[in-house]
Image (tube, rainbow, N blue to C red; front, top):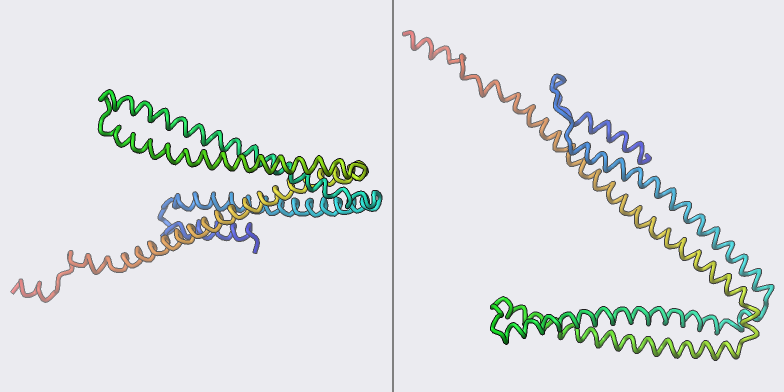
Length: 276
């Protein structure tokens, strides 16, 4: 059974269940049902849409991958041994680019940590000035203690960030020097194989973007299915409540004559006794 068919059947059942058994009763549809049905409809639509998009994205990824392999295989045959011979240089270049990115992130982390450290020191300076002037209330005593703790913590973070940046910078510089050395040693192979590695680089970027799209759709699909299951669970609970209320009202109707029999239905013997 498809989601659409399941949803249509559920719609019909819940609308029927949401009214009491008396045909003359005009009780409105439980508003919770409408709310959950809207969630169910939307999630069902999202699931169908994303499943189609996911299938298309995977097909595109596989097609692109096959085209990439065929194209690179063609270039390998065409260019020959210069490709494996120049590989150490391009591998070193890839590592260098990665280390450069990590070094830049380390700089940002250091700047952020240093900014927090300076702010904490400035706050401490103001608090100490007020304390010396006798203008600091008890609440500021606690604030002063908290600020000192923040300074000590942020100073440790600054030192760690500075050390990490120093390490990444050194690694980047060493890798960059290796690239320069390999470039000199393998220059003629690098020139001949340049078209292969440039094309491989472009293909990899394209493949990574497509893979990221697949991951995004898979996460969204999981979320939509979770919403669908939650709405189904809530609707099932509401349906049970409606049936329980219906059963309770039926039981109430059956008991009502016996409870109200006291009016105008005295025991005949008691009535006879009263005449005598």
